[in-house]
Amino acid sequence: MFALIVLIGGRDAFAQLPDGLTRSRWAMDDPIYAEKYARGAEKTNIAGKIKQAADARFVRESYGFYGSAGMSSFGDGGNPMASAEAGVTGYWTSYFTNRIGAVAAANDDDVYLGVETGIRLQAPTRLAPFVGLGLFAGYAEETRLADNDGVDNDDNGWIDERGEEEDHFSGALAAVYPEIGVHFWWTPKVRLSVFARELVTTEGRDSDSTYFGGTIGIFSR
Image 1 (spheres, rainbow, N blue to C red):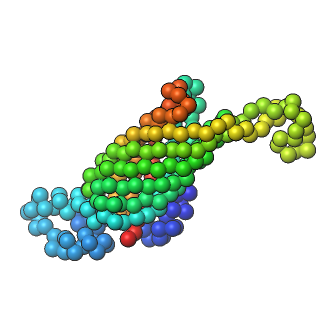
Image 2 (cartoon, helix red, strand yellow; image 1 turned 180 degrees about the vertical axis):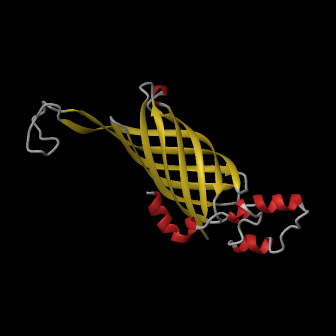
């Protein structure tokens, strides 16, 4: 999925190595940043060097696509659940973003499909800590034993064979979550992120979970 997101944003966006690892004017490919720092800080101006190395205020009004993946453990059973998400995101200001995406999550027992939206407040810097608030809404399916219902549930030509299972709609699910994390701008167009969320679900506190994930975003104006 991440490969698809990279292709959407342009093949060269992620292939470019980050200049900021070796020099302070890290985002000269962006016209706003390049104009502001056309005359870089003098070598002896340490504060100026730090400022131009950290500055990411040029991201204001940029938008893009993102792909995300992560892992959580739902409820007291502790059955790990993997998830993937893809969506769109944008910067209203250099420190405020919102997003919306489609989510699929699954483990050995359940499959969740839905949509997710959220907002984040972040530092307007290249390495940018953030806090956020989000909402997930969707529905869940579970796999259950169906070897005595007179139906060929797995379409293999046999009815009620031993161990036959079926997918069953188990209800709607919603969750609200606070989150914390950090962004790193690999280039002026590519943003990498890691985060942690605490999901508070409508299924009760036994179904709440802690979620850890990572994201790749490709941006433009």
